[in-house]
Amino acid sequence: MTYEDRLFAALADPTRRAIFERVAGRRQSVAELARAMPVSQPAISQHLKVLKEARLVRDEPSGARRIYSIDPEGLGPLRAWLDRFWTEQLAAFKAAVETADES
Amino acid sequence: MTYEDRLFAALADPTRRAIFERVAGRRQSVAELARAMPVSQPAISQHLKVLKEARLVRDEPSGARRIYSIDPEGLGPLRAWLDRFWTEQLAAFKAAVETADES
DNA sequence: TATCTTCATAAGTCATGACTTATTATAAGC
DNA sequence: GCTTATAATAAGTCATGACTTATGAAGATA
Image 1 (tube, rainbow over the protein chains, first blue to last red):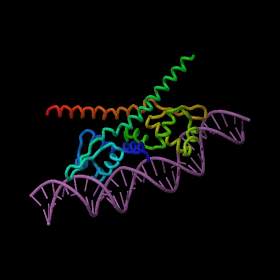
Image 2: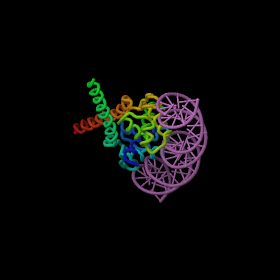
Image 3: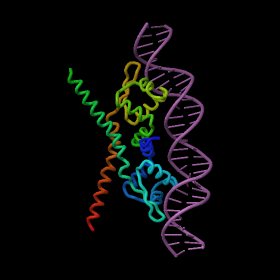
Image 4: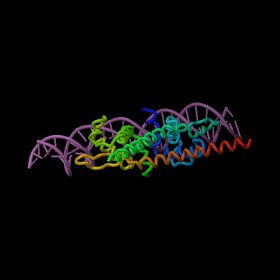
């Protein structure tokens, strides 16, 4: 499984995306997330593990708690992937225009 | 299932992403994709259906064939989603700087 | 020390989804 | 008209993954 696979797979699950969005809004502990979301604490931990392996979040111990925050680098590869098609589509559009010019 | 869910779910599968990338590079038929990829023709058709429902590709009949091409609008919502965190992180950074200024 | 909180992991269940082969419909070419 | 090519759908298999409850480890607090 490539790194890109892990990234897209991590973002595919709605619950996991909700956790990510929440953590992105404000850094918080597992218990805090578990209280706010309609799934159990282990489910939250499992989702966080997946998000961490995709480098979308970081964690930092704070006493008995563990504070999760967004990893600022994490979305970079997604943006890069997206930009590939952006420029690709621009190139295709430009090529189409130039072909039309030949008429 | 929301539209955003469909979009992320569609991009989660590596085979489906490969199909999308291939179609984005050059519009082509189902048979052409099936010949190039290590899965059966029905598998290709099923993936294309998912991509189409996520508005990532369009299709157009051409005789007995059906030509699939990228839907230029399709990646817009993904970009929008991404930009939310871009600005969010900028705001967080700015807030952090201003808090530091208070020292 | 004993208790309580926090969190990760283990183990098991269940639904989903990515494939396959088989089949059908439609269009093209002989 | 008959055969061939193309593509969608049906039906079935199998792996994965999103949950659950149970449990244990590590830190805080009395």
